[in-house]
Length: 178
Image 1 (cartoon, rainbow, N blue to C red):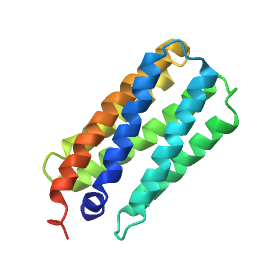
Image 2 (cartoon, rainbow, N blue to C red; image 1 turned 135 degrees about the vertical axis):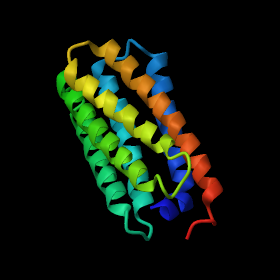
Image 3 (spheres, rainbow, N blue to C red; image 1 turned 45 degrees about the vertical axis):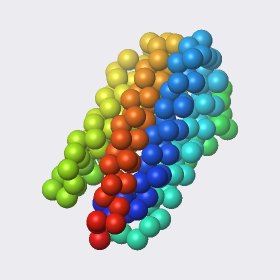
């Protein structure tokens, strides 16, 4: 998996940049409606899913997780784009499920890679952030659209920065891993 990630480090950075842009846009417009949030989140998740699948298309034994996460992201993005009128509760459940699955997968990957790479805590932190967001959204689903926007935007910015740092570290490993 490390070899695959180091070869496709630019896609990890791209995922991070897309997350940061999504978060900044959502913070800049805190009065955004649930409809706009659903569409914005749908576009973000669709792009994130596509980049996850692209990362998983390389040779390697650990690509199933990336492809699964990509398919899940694409499916969630399509649902949000086709039915933007969904209620905030349904959107919360979709976002929470996606965040929990992504978080658990990234934590598992960090544990598997801990003896292979240094600073695997960046990947673990990314997973922990996603997992915490998912759990918080399940526990407090009625906080309101503005609170949802701020929580998701903050998560997206932090997660994006973590992914950018991870991608740049992976770039340094390119060529040294076989």
